[in-house]
Length: 314
Image (cartoon, rainbow, N blue to C red; front, side, top):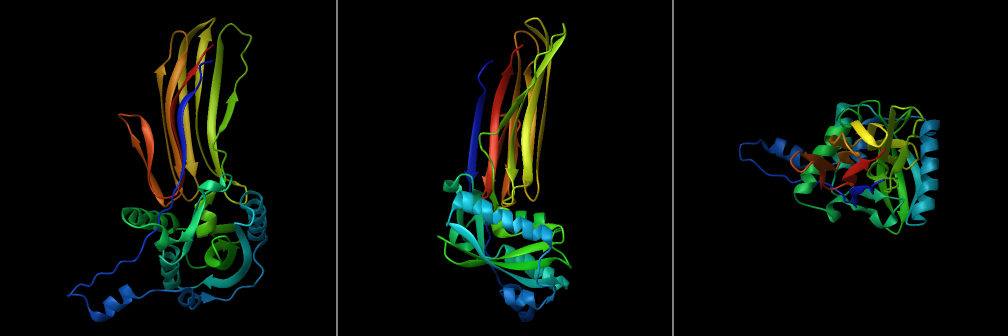
């Protein structure tokens, strides 16, 4: 079997956005003040109603499993120190404040693959990045969470400890589990080597065989968050390939995915396909270049991109 030719890279970068205000002479002073006013967790609390302190079992399980995985891979670099239930969002203003706070320059955010600690970066949004990438992050976070955070969504405040110091994040959840937190949402778990599966050769005269490769991204609590991959199948008699086909797929929860594939050779001594795959968190973006047949990542965020070819022999 011919060796797989692939370009694989895991880029852990982070995108954020700062709030820049500009004044318009035609804008009323009151409107200017509202636009420029900085919101805080205290403002958000005013737009919530009290809820029972114990979190739903689904959320508690996710917190417990995340603690275990953080301890396994990041040791004392990042630990959950305390959780505090803030309440349930009860007004449209509360929804708006929540979306502002998620991307506020003074909020903490994380990126990277905890299974490879060297990729992990954590810090205040405004201290880590600036420029055009901030616009990408703002748009990505708002579009991703627009339908997720709404009236009735519950809020936890999580206190974190570790080499990054002590800081807090807002964690949004419902009865079924955690919806978003800048740490939980920015970090991923994945084996960058990917997974491979092959079929067994049949003993019949008309033979076919396939090769499948895929990469999986998981939440910190271990459940699957997204996957991208491809599968090539060849049909042959003896040592001659008569046909070949390929399929691809890509999806991620609260993020972006791109997958493309095509057959390069379908008859003769072997079959060959080309693939272009990518996953990323919402603070970055993916694009497909048809002329180069490749997926590329831009902006800032945890991501995985794989472009390459695969030849399959009888």
